[in-house]
Image (cartoon, rainbow, N blue to C red; front, side, top):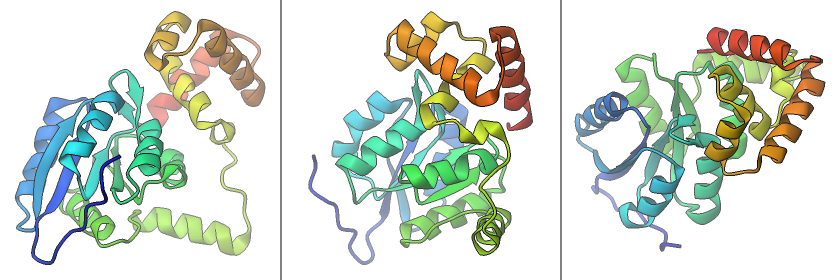
Length: 224
């Protein structure tokens, strides 16, 4: 584990970008370098590469996508929080924040911003998280605070009851991945995938893979 990095007054904030789409990385890098107080210290396309580079890069802020090449952004967030506690994490994703914002915060991120947000909003999110704050859209903040005050359950959507791993598998089913492909991507056994899949079916009250696949595709299209 690398030694904690302390950002000195006047020093540029070091930003690491983790996304498997080159155009997204390029766009984020452009926004970072447009700021006089930030610099890009590294880029990665998946969890393994990010964890290999983080010790050398020693970022102040890591910007992470939820869906990464052969890996999952939530797993990266958890790993970075466990190994590099000083690194702040901001999720930058195409998925609706109502699905992933709270999951991201629980995993250890300090903010969530949608990829469709205006460039100025993304910069605002970076500055907020770098300053030690939590960034969510005004609508998401209102929703969370409203639930807290009214003691309303987090979500009536049954998909929200899935664990992070189950949701990841559910999402991969929506992408058309087979059981063996999911096992290879997540580096787990086919049997483990089948067990997760059966648990997902029970939680969502579906009885067949056809029904589960249909539900996953519909959910994915609605939450992108």
